[in-house]
Length: 584
View 1: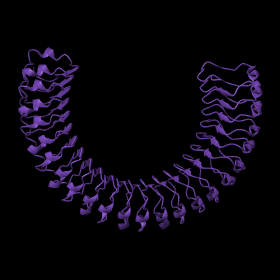
View 2: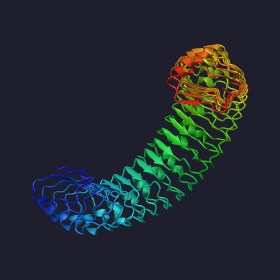
View 3: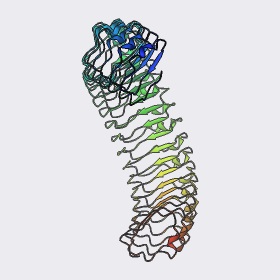
């Protein structure tokens, strides 16, 4: 019987117990239901009972323990439920019990340990639950136990180590949990253990390396954890280890290099972490390594180049990292490399050009990086290159034009970059080029017009840029063009009217721009045009009235602009027009 979402239902018929053959009763989201009738105990064939999100339900009738065939009992988000019947453990057939987010539930009856068939027990979000029954370990069939976000839970009973079938044990957000039972390693079937954000947990028991089936171990945000057991490397089946945000963790045990199955290793935000074991390269199965925010990490061990399966390597915010190993290019499987905000990194090893599978290379805010390797263009698989705010980068190697797969190229705030390679137009796969605030860039190479796939070109704040190539209109895929604050730009090439896909054109504060091409109205796809603060702009071409798709037109502070074209009312799609501070 499905009565879910009957939000006006306050009570069930007192004779519901006459439905003797009822197998399933779904009352989920009956948000007005306050109590259940005693006659429910007569539903001897009931196997599935769902009371989840019955937010006004305060208690269960004692007689409910007579539902001897009940296998699934869901009570999640029953926010007013404070306790369970004392003899609740009489429900011997129960396989799944969900009490998640029963935020008023303070304790469990001792009888609960008699659930001999129980496999799944969810208590996540029971943030007033302070402890578990002492003999909790007698739940021998338990496979999944979820205690995540039981923020008042101070300890686990020692008997919990006898849950011999337990495979999944989330304890995330148990903020008051200070330690684990000494013999925790007896949980021989455990596959997934999550201790993330157990912010009072200072250490792990030495027995934990005995978890011979463990594959996933989450310790993210354990802020007081200072070390790992010396024999941690005995966790031979471990595939994922997350230590992100363990800010007091200073080092790793040498034995960690024996985690032969480890594929994902995250150490981001370990602010006191100073070095990796010398033989770290023995982690031959490693696919992802995250060291972002390890601000005290000064160098990487040379052996790291032997991580032959490594595909993702994040080093963002490693402020003390001055260089990479000379043979870094041996990481032949690397697909993503993040060196953002490595503010002390002065150069890249020449061997880096041998990363033949590299697709994404992030180097933004590497403030001491002055050059790239001469043969940088050998990175033939590169799709995204981010050099944003590499403020000391003076030039790009000519070979960069050989990056035939490059789609996104970020060079914003490269304040010392004076020019682009002459053959820059060979980057025929380029879709996005960002040169925002390249304040020393005086011109663009003529070849740039060959970027046939280019959709976005950001040139705002290029204060020395005086003109654009004459054949600029060949960029027929261009959708967005930003030239705002190009204060030396005097005119636009006539060919610009051939940008048939252009939708957004920003020219605000181009103080020396005096006019627009006569056939400007050919830009039939234009939706947004910003000419605000173009203080020398004298007039608009009559053809501008042919911009049939134009919705936003800004002309504020165009002091020299005279009258608007006579047929200006033809701009039928116009939604926003700003003429404030103008003369016309």
